[in-house]
Length: 353
Image (tube, rainbow, N blue to C red; front, side, top):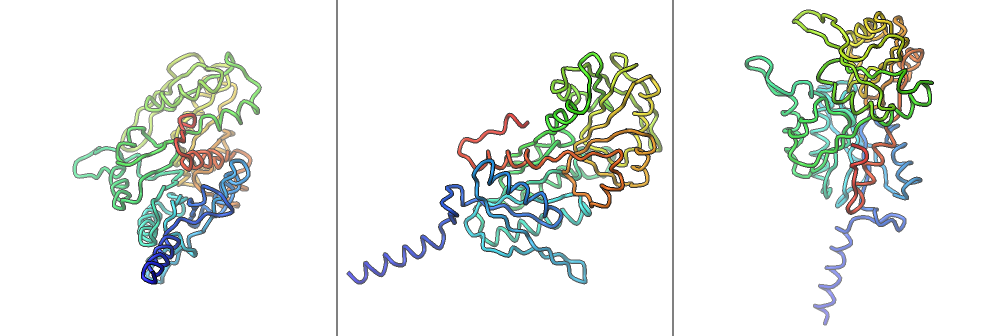
C-alpha cells in the first residue's frame, strides 16, 4: 500500500511539472508570446488584441539580448516556458539583417533547450528573399539558405510572415508557412482618404514581376484598371520606360509593390507617370526598408506620398522627420488574427492570404 501511494505521488508530481500552464482558466493558456528587442511595442499591441478581441489571455515575455564586448550575442528568456507553444516575434531587418539572422538562430536554440513544445516564428519581414536564384556563377541562393538555417531546429514548425518577395519562396521552407498580405490594410485606408471611383483610378505595377500582386490589389480598389510600368536595368542604372495599359492621364495612380529599398527606381517611375499627365501618384509598399535615407528624402522633395506597414520597426525620430510624405499602416491586427487562428483547432487564415 505504501509502495502504491509513493508511486502515485511521484506520478502526480511529474504530471504537474510537465503539464502546460493554464492561466486564468483560459483553455489556450499553453501558448506564449515572445518578442525580441525592436518588437517591444508591437508585441504589447498584439497581446492586447488577442486578449480583448479574442479572449486569449496569452502571456507575453520579452527576450533579453545581451551583447558582449566581443560583439557576441546571448538571448535569454526571463520566465519558464517549458511545454509551451511559443510564438516568437522578431524584427529581421532592424538594426541589421545579418545580426538579426544570427539572433534568430541563437534564440531558437535557447527555446529548444528551454523545452518548449514547438516554435512559430512570427517574422513580419524576411530578408534575403530577393536572392532567390543563381544570377551569376559561383553565387549562393541566399533566400533558400536562410530557411535552411531555420530548419536546423525541428521545433520550428511554422512561420508567419507578410508579402514574401516571390510566393514560390514558400517552397524553401519544409514546414508550414503563412504568407499574409497587406492588400486589405492599404485598401481600407486609401478608400477613406481618396475621393475616387473606378473610372478615376489606376493601379500600376512597377514592373512585370509585380503585375499579379497589383492585379490582386485592384480587386480591393473597385477593380480599377491595372497598368505595368516597363523598365530595363543594366549594371549601373535604371532606364525608365513606359506605362503599358490604359492611359493614366488625369487619373489617380496607386503604385503597389512588396517593398521599397532605396526608392530610386520607384521614385523615377512615379515622376515619369506624373509626366504622362497623372493627376496624383501614390506609392504603397508592405516593407519600407529605406536603406539609403538620403535617397529616401527625395520622396518628400518630389511630393510623392508613400504608404508602408510597420513590418520593419522605425525610430520615432525617423517617423516624425518624414511625416509629411510617409504614412505607416499598422499590421498588428493582421498578425494577431493569424496567431489566433493557429491557437484554434481547425483554424484557418485563408481570408488573410
